[in-house]
Image (cartoon, rainbow, N blue to C red):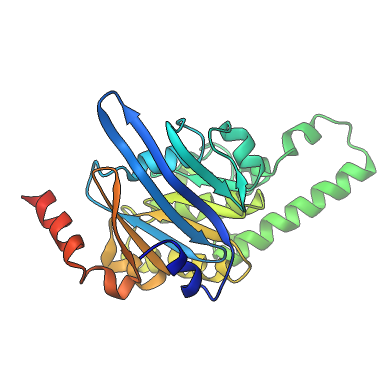
Length: 263
């Protein structure tokens, strides 16, 4: 199947993200060897594969943390290949990491407020009536997000006191404060209890209804496959299979990739 298969799956939705024949080399190692994926707008797309298959390199190249040696990265049809991370972020592409990095001594609400572009700059301005109104709007926005995520009761808790799952929700909240249109997540439920993992993934599914798209790398297939629209399987820097979540584990190529990784 090609990336156009996901377009059909998503009822003709336009691409939020597409990579075309993406390549990245480290010396003689082909970390990305012609990778083409398509993330339909308002969908959850999953990338899986054994360790060393190129998943993290793919994320790093898409978000500008590594430069591509060939191919293209398109966001909403615009070529963002090798743009610096801050420019990609400003366009609406937000990345969360496997290990969340909140400002630990700040409260949950404060972590959300400083994630809003321009907030820190505005704080340095004089407290005019206009700024006070703006701050009130941002606080309301932050509380709306906290309510949606179900962690409004933690608004004044220091981030350092949150559980692993709560930190994941905080990361999502920070992305929403930035008005993200595409959220790229590296193992968002790693180390999170199953009940909270399901809650996090249900929240992501709700967010797709507003047009937000997700590209996720995750190993816990027993939980996440129920929530995703399309799955790409990587091995040795290449896409070796793709399909719907209920079909992908039946694919002989996928079975071969994972059994080979265990051998």
